Image (cartoon, rainbow, N blue to C red; front, side, top):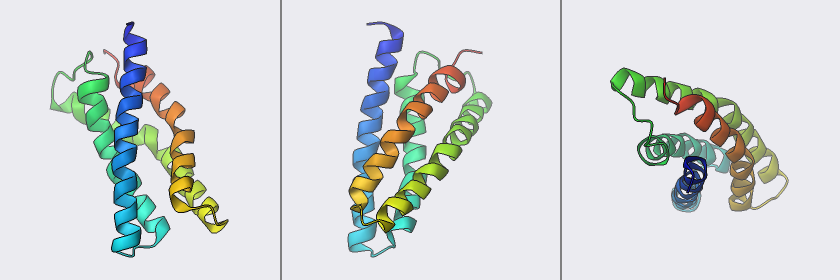
Length: 131
């Protein structure tokens, strides 16, 4: 399997795993802790960003390891920066859909799916590349 195909498959696996964990946390925050849906969604998006970065760094793009902590921190900043724009759109989209009576779990699925392509392209082309 080519390295491109392998990273896409791994990226999808990481995305699916993180999404599953995020949905479980979203349900917990909304149904058990009674947090508002937009606030719970924001908490979940921020936490899933961190888990996603770590899994993508150490597994999806493991063929391009960081040489030191400074490079790792730089990649983390770049990853968070690359996710900032889609994250803002995801949060706005989530609020928009929920206010239009779309079930919150479906709204979350829709906004995460839309951001997937942008995040993969930024990760593969900019963040996890050999310098």
